[in-house]
Length: 438
Image 1 (cartoon, rainbow, N blue to C red):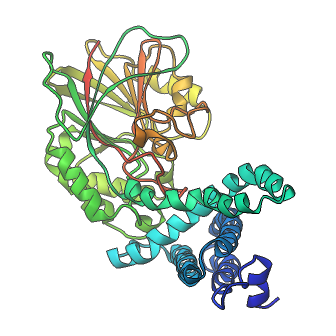
Image 2 (image 1 turned 135 degrees about the vertical axis):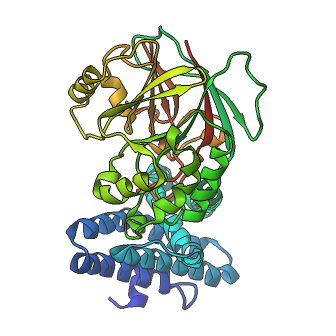
Image 3 (image 1 turned 90 degrees about the horizontal axis):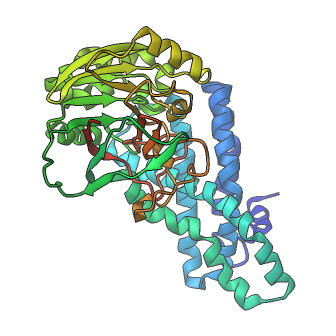
């Protein structure tokens, strides 16, 4: 089948000569990128790229064809060009990851961001189209052509959502998060409220809280440049935290191929490095040496199933850093907490990258767990002030504060993200935690 035949198969050739461009680029990317990746980088990345393209492109092809039939004739050409450019950017982005490295702002804004936005929209559009399919079939059976002609705009909602989500993905708002610890709580893990002050400073507390800045899931890459992360860290450091906890997943494929980038991003922490402590996340085990080097160069203590103690204005704090494991959380955490028992008169903190381990935590063994990993759920309604994300129905604590017995878990939304290539309704977190001891 030639390019025009392919476009016709998806309904793209009926209203002008540009309808073939997007399907042709999509098909070429679908075949060429995994093949190129398999030859140069290996089967794992080839499979990764192939799966993402297979998940995202069918819905994008369907929406393109239907939108061409729905829009006015003078908009068909621009529509074709937008889809073609987005697809081309996505293909170049996937190909660039075969020999990944951090790129400049021109490449990020012209290639990485539009390409990843397009892939994310396509991934969301697939389930959305399937959800709406029964109604489309009903309208078609009833020959409701007027309804069908407007139905495409509802089907295109993931494409519309992707535009404002670019801002959600690249911006942050300064927050102060307040909560009180307790020696009692529910028998089962339960979300509990916190005080959040966004874009403004709250009134001072009568009693001095423990002030913690948590950095997690920075994922230096196309959405998180070195300069942007460095500026964000500098702002947080200026808030005079008692402790800075870095809870893992610092790099992406791009930054793993760019030695020294994490060192430069973390430099604002050097003056307060004696108050900083870090752990590994899951992705850090893919490239542990750059992480170790950066922490050593800045002067940050990296805890790999170890403890450290800090003197703070509210008293001594014991910090235990758990290394990331995929399974066996109960045994690993029990052994770790037995090896480092509670110190008298110390507040006891556990740094645990993946919050799923909170379920396996021995009862009342720690006062507070700080986690990341979930990126706050990444898709949800948090931007609207509603604590719901796609992870809310699961066992995974997605973002915010949770309680079980006398232990509390705070899940940070993360500074960056990785995997699903965009934040939708769940902004990055840029917060100072003010924690009131029990």
